[in-house]
Amino acid sequence: MLARFFNKASIKQLVLSNIVSIIFIALSLIGMMLSELNSVYIFNELINRISRNSFLVLSLLIPILAGLGLNFGLVIGAMAGQLSIIAVTYWQVEGIIGFLLCIVLALPISILLGYLTGRLFNATKGQEMIAGLIVSFFANGLYQFLLLVMVGTAIPMSNNVMIKPDGIGLRNTIALNGVNGNGGIKYALDGIFRLNLFYFIIILAVLLIIYSLYNLERIKKDRIVKKSKETYTVYVVASIVLIVISVLILLGDNMYKNLKIPLITWIVIAVLCLFNKLIMRTKIGQNFRTVGHSQHIAKVAGINVNRTRIQAVIISTVLASWGQIIFLQNIGTMNTYGSHMQVAMFSIAAILIGGASVTNAKISHAITGVVLFHMIFIVSPTAGKALFGDAQIGEFFRAFVVYGVIGVSLGLHAWKKYKLGKM
Image 1 (tube, rainbow, N blue to C red):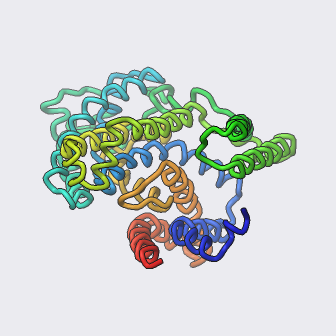
Image 2 (image 1 turned 30 degrees about the vertical axis):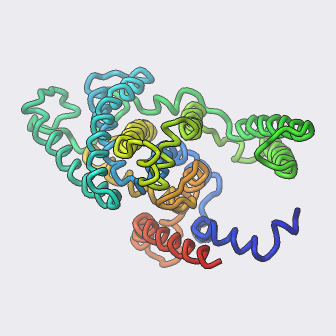
Image 3 (image 1 turned 90 degrees about the horizontal axis):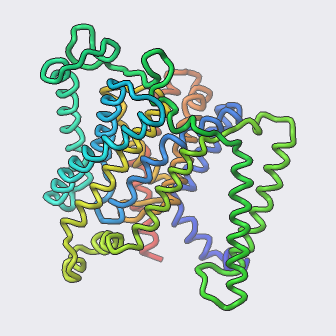
C-alpha cells in the first residue's frame, strides 16, 4: 500500500493535481510565522469567516459543473439578498423570524434575476465569465439608482434611521441590530446555539468511526463499497487521534477550549453540501454534467441546453442571495452600496485556491478554499507589516492577495493542465 502511494510518479501527479492548494498552504504557514498573531485569535477569526463565507462559495459549484465557468454574476444574487434585508429592517421584523422573512423575500427576486442572467449567458456562450462581470456592473448601476433616487421619491420611506437627512435615498450604512441596538437580524442564525469546537470534533469523529466500521463490515460480506479497506481503517485511526487530542485540550488549561462554532449555521452549510451532492444524482444534475461536458452531446441526447443552463444560473443566484443574508447577519452591518461588490471576487478566489478550475469543482474544493483563502486574509496585513515595516504596505499586501489570487490560480491551473497533458 505504501509503495503504491509513495512512488515517484504518484507523488509527481499528486503535486501537479494539487499545485494551487499546496502553494497557498505554504503561503498560509509563512504568513502565520511572519505575523506572530496569537493562534487562538487566528482560529477564532477562521471559524467566523468559514461560517459567513462558505455558503456563498458553495453557490458557485453548479454553474461550474454546468459548463458556465466561474459565475461572476454572483453579485446579482447578493443584491437580491440585500434588497430583502432592507425591506425586513424597514419593517422592523427581528430575530430568526426576520431572517426567515429575508430568505422568503429574496427567493422570487433572485429567481427573476437569475432567469434574466441565464438568458444573457445563453446569448454569450463561451464568454459567460466576462458577461457575468459586466452584467454585475450594470445591475449595480440599477441597484444604486433604485436606492439612491427612487427610495424617498417614487418609493415612500419614512424611517429616519435608514433614510438620508434630505429624505431621498438610503444611508451608506444600515445597522442590522435593531432600532435600539438590540434585535434586528444580527446573529439571528449564528446566535441560536454555539457549541464548543472540540465537542463538535468529537461528535464528528465518533460518527466517522461508526460510518467506517459499518463499511468495513460490508467489505467483509463482499458487498460493493466505493473505498478500500485501508481507507476506512485510516478514517478510524484518524478519528481516534482527533478524539484524544480534543479530550486533552478540553481537560487542559488553555484558551483553545473556549473556541465555539455557530452550530446551526454550520448545519445549514452541511445541508447545502448535501443538496449539491444529491442534486447531481438526479436527472437535472445529470443534465448539468452532460451540458458541462459537451453541449453538442447534450443536444443529441435530447437535453434542452439553454433551459438547463438557465436552471443552473437560477439555482446559483438563489443560493448567492441566501448566502449574502447569512454573511450580513454575521457581520451585523450592511454597507448599502458596497457589501455586494466583492462577493464574486472573494468566492471565486476561494474556490480556485481550494483546487477547483473553470470546468471542475467539488464540495471539498469549496471548503478547502474558504479555509486557505481566509487564513491568508487574516494573517496577510500583519505579515506584510512585519516584512516591510509599514502598516500601509501590509494593507496593500492584503489587496494584492485578494485581487491577484484569481489570476495566479488561473495561470497555475493552465500550467497544471499543460503538464498533466504531457505526462
